[in-house]
Image 1 (cartoon, rainbow, N blue to C red):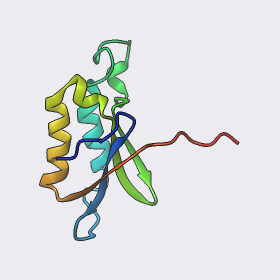
Image 2 (image 1 turned 180 degrees about the vertical axis):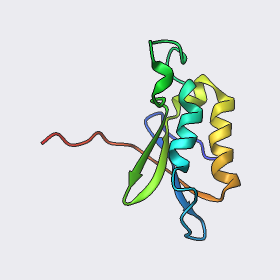
Image 3 (image 1 turned 45 degrees about the vertical axis):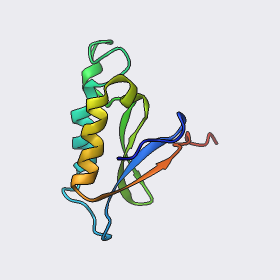
Image 4 (image 1 turned 90 degrees about the vertical axis):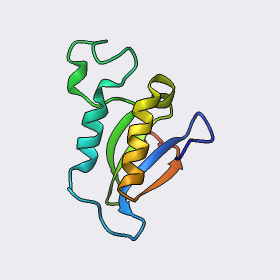
Length: 108
């Protein structure tokens, strides 16, 4: 199981298997993040409509043309079983996982 070595690092679950195949279905990242949407600061009911968006701790994205889910280490602190769920999802599906720091978009 991957555990970030620094509080500032996220875990990137990439939609590529260790054999280099693209993981299917194509919307897997959105589905996984949708399941995790209830895990957020203050809980799912912390703001009106909060259950309708992704958790800031589990965000689907595309990096370099590869679907990914960025998992923030705060998820592990808030709900260890949810952390285990996403990490086991990656392991069970043989997905590549990397530690990194998601940088904000450059303002131009």
